[in-house]
Image (tube, rainbow, N blue to C red):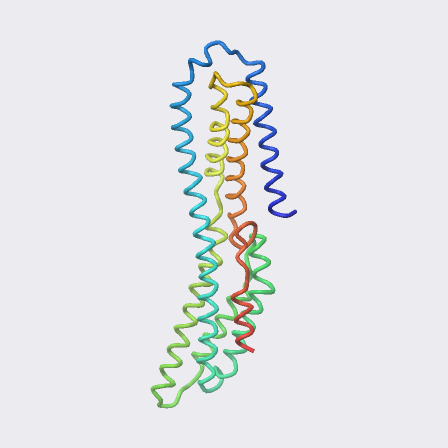
Amino acid sequence: MNVYVTGLLWVAGAVVAGAVIAYLVRRYGLDEGRPDNNDAAGQAFTIVGGLHAVVVAFVLISLFDAAGTVRDGSYQETQALVSAAWRAESLPEPAHSEVPALARQYAQTVVAQEWPRLQQGLEPGPEGWSLVKRMRESLDNTELPDDDWLVNEKTDAASDLTDVYEQRQARLNAVRDNDVGLVLWFVLAVGSVIFVLLPNLFGGTKLLTHVIIVSTLAATTTLLLYAIYQMQNPFAGGAKVGSDAFAQAIARLR
């Protein structure tokens, strides 16, 4: 189902639930003393709302930054990959032919096999690591003549492969590191429920106004929780970092 349609369904459900609870509390609850609770309830609502807003903002900003880091890291990874392949073309065999071919195969493997698995939150498999290792071994097995320029090219190619390794590791860690744990979800869920229910302690407003206030708070809170849920995995959902960088690398390595 489309992410926006799903989000609207979440919000609609929250609006209905908030409206029903607000109506039942105001219709069948005790009105006695409720207006007198406004000062105390207002202070509690301010504290709870402030704390809840801080937690939600912290989680959202962290997930948003992580998605941007993954996107930038994918381009850095492919830049290093293409650079290593081009430098290897200036070296003798076996690196001259093996490294560019392995680099192209690596990019194709990431696009065709790893990215779909990362979108599902799964481990990518050993194929990518194996290709990186084979590129490094090909460089190590390449013997050079007494030529400072070739030595520098081989050294730079090896440095590029190190960058590929580091960026790849960071990309694979993103799925695990971005997972919002059960404890944090518990805090977010309970905090949201308390935040939405507290306005029912207020008195003095008309029934329709009260229902609109509680429904609006429920919709806003649910929308934020849905955004957090969608951005947990930077390769899927609302974040959905694509494999464009690797597709471009494949084109450059042909």
